[in-house]
Length: 556
Image 1: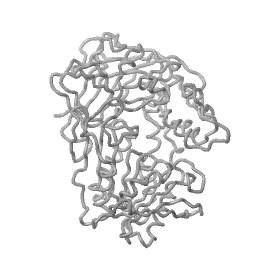
Image 2: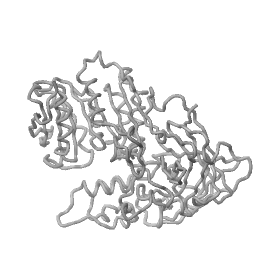
Image 3: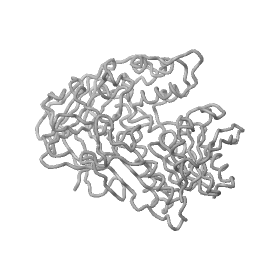
């Protein structure tokens, strides 16, 4: 019989790491449980905040352990993001395995940074770690922070302001627009209000080079022999990393049994709304609601409490939510089977600027010499990621779905829209854009948004991708653009599942910035130490020999 949460006890223990630093660690137990599997969370966000879930897990028969990361809250040491989480995670798991109340089977759970602490500990292969449940997180921190060569600026700058050592008497800048627009990028920490060396390091290493090796686990994780549950939302900035982690483990894990012990739950959420129905300005209905902690609990019941023979495979490897029709689907893998890569071609008479344009989108490639479209990308007035309102200032820009129509009035946004659909269009998988482009500057960004236009005109962003022109061929060796030269580029739009309903239209927006969720491109190719900027005239070509298109995995 399960215990009541009110019966759960909490004991705080100072657990020593290998260098003698003590980490504050809460142990939650039911009085009836003398020896059991252990669930571990390691967090930089205050172990006290996890009390409710920890008590729930303990009431279900686990011993739950929550630890403040090094240098955070009640723990000793100095906090440096991610730098010590691998070895500290190993030490914590090893310590747990020696406790008389641990039966030798340990799991880890948590999201975001707390999900990363799982990957980093697992990569060290500590004895006794049996399973992990990393929600909305990364195995390559570079690819979380950078996409297509552009950095998630407001995310990391805002996080750094709240998670770095602030000199006494200083306060963070309230003028975030000035901070985000400041050049060179290397000085953003000073604009926040104080020196943050680790933030400066992240912002000044846009190449996927050796700087990132300490937080680059992609090649290591396939050696792990652990069942894993991956949960994330389409609008989460971790969506690509989380889905790719699942795909990598299911398809490339060296241990065949491990491949059969992976689960992906992919919903319509952003980073702060996992499990909810209302996300941004869209209500996805009651079916979108899940109990994420409950899903974790079911996972741990199978892989920690059951014996190994009873936990051979996962019954439903993939559960994904289809936006639009708002229903859950099941699949054996991601991308799901039964979908075919289908091109949707861009068309116009060269005047696709704004939502009132002649830009169109259909299944037929151009057969004539259609005029190219162009727009001016001004680094001093970058296209915003979402409309700025009194309730949503620039600093609060969201990844969630919000009405894009105010942005589509800008002349630096190209808009291509299909006719209303007479039958639903359903797609699920990984989307991409293949565009023929040019710019008159040494660098430029291309931002591509996939949009569902509702019958009432509401323009719902489904997914977005960005590519910095100089990073078109390589994350390691950026190469400036040759002004005026036409390139074919591929823009990754990430994982997506949706249905464009009857009467709805499919739309593609293309512009030169997604600010401040990504840094604006100064268009000079000078990198993070450059102080200058240039207005870039960017062009998109869509004639018979240069068929720019979106590729969606459409239902067969």
